[in-house]
Length: 267
Image (tube, rainbow, N blue to C red):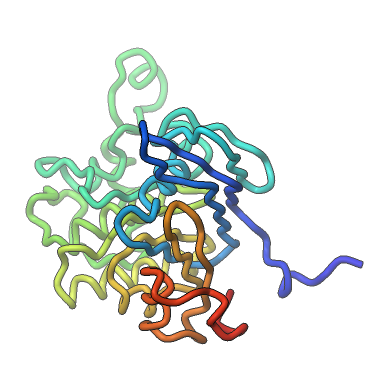
């Protein structure tokens, strides 16, 4: 008899036994990963825990030496970030890939500009700026990003607003997964909260989010589950509602074993 979805939520993205070596260094040593539909999964780990290598494998920036990645149950082989994007996975990196002098609308469609209909687009390659403006306004309004005009240059925005543009761009184009690498780093409290609120809205629109962050209060504020990376593997996945921040950090640093945690702490 099939179980209900409550006991077995749909797994959108999964990795099994990922191995990645750089010369003598093993960055991933049989790492597993599981992202469920409609969740914010935080990924935390000390430097050298393998979390950045894991994210690079999931976003197509790195090809693992061993192991497999599945999207909706199908094994996938990303050879580049473009492959991941084509599969509906968008990544927002810490060093925001925004072009400061371009408008918000132009940034939203950077690398995937809309062309004018007919021969103006297909032959002359003319960009449909009006349509891009209308669509970017609609998408940012949809996510309730409070930016007055999409024709502003990105360099006129604050750090938090820029980050919201990057997150909004990812949410606009992702069909499967949004991966966010340290999206609140270098932001003040108010701006950080603005981005966290946007991350929640992305999830509430039905897109699962992978959130890589060093900021434990932020992780505990928005994550549905927390993936703890340690020594190139997945040490545990915990439920932030049933575990303290200090116990989570203890597992991450190796001060505490997963076996020492109460059963309900695991997710």
